[in-house]
Length: 242
Image (tube, rainbow, N blue to C red; front, side, top):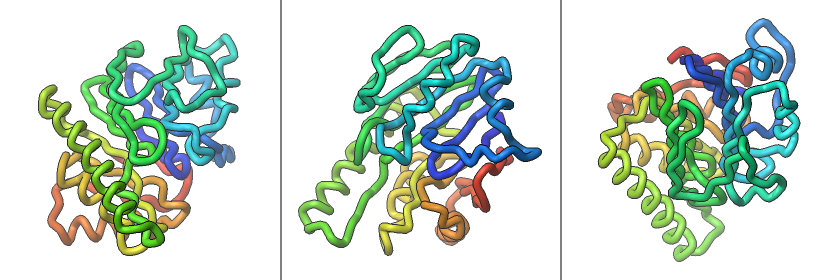
């Protein structure tokens, strides 16, 4: 399995059975030896395009143009995205849905912001893409609002925990927000998620070009003696060794 960090919360996962694209909104599709769009979209492999919600940093309607009639492509879109209707290769999903798309087994969960998060099983691996699921703790909000956000996040995590326990699922890779805008609370969500699920690999996202934050998070979890490998990212269009 090959993973490419594109930018922000967008990842491309190449597995034996197909290519999964998560939360495209814009690409630094600069051509280089490592990556070009043609390598992905015209690889001949099945394409599965996920959009966790309609925020402009997670979704662009331009992805619908990828369906040119020549590609084997399936879209899995959160139901808050209203720019496209469901049809055979466009699956519109809300939270707590279980579905199959070709070789993929997909379970959706809620988000503590908008849309859904995705648990995807493919070729013996389990991936989790959080979308905007995070422990959002904003200083400018009231204590009641911050408590509501905490309870919402932890409630969704509890649902995920109950599901993976029932299904005996171990997470191989988790893509999860590490957002420096939260100031002193920047690591809370990722740390809590790792404590609950102990994914083999944790890949930070949604860090708004602050790549140093990925190193800080890795160091933080090492200090806590976590057994999860926390990936450090250095630039857009970066291939991860997993």
